[in-house]
Length: 294
Image (cartoon, rainbow, N blue to C red; front, side):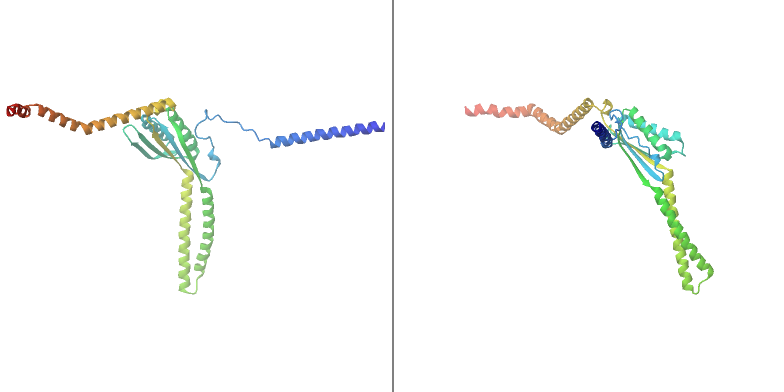
């Protein structure tokens, strides 16, 4: 009976050990397995990444977008972007610059510069991209740079506090009176230096506050001849064929322009040579030759 009990106990212990080992291995396997992340279909989400930058207090951002779209559509898209800014009102959006350049006969470049309310900048950029896509264009470059202005302002405030403390001490010594005129002049000179430093720090903070209150955004537009056919191999081949044909016609016209005057001159000389009296002068030597032989 004791043997059976011992055997049963040993088996139960082995079973519990196996279960515990299996549970540890399963837990370790789960720990080693990387966390699954929902994949993004790039074919359906080509464009600027949807990153919420408003969760960075004290950081001043600078947005820059570059678009490629049909040359003939650039002017209309610029007007649409400008109208969207004007709709927000000058307290939320201001146009600070505009450029429209005809590079070639049918090649266009353009630019728009904005100053935006930081809370509206991200959505304004998304709407700007949507307007370009509706005009059969696309976003080709997006850059968002941040400047930690909040830290600069904090450090400037700390420096101002130290300057203020030192300036208070200098003013107190001047008010109490000093023994010599040279010492007074030195204290006055030091007080003036401290006040200038305070002005510099205040200017730095004002500039930082301006950067935080107004977000710059740049839209660059570039045209592409033949882009209206679509971004496809067929469209690219057609655009290349058009460019090649235009080059061939240009070369032919240049060659004709260079050779045509000489061809006209040669034709004129031939006509003059065949006309009288030049033709008679050419025949007389031939007629005189038999007479001399006789």
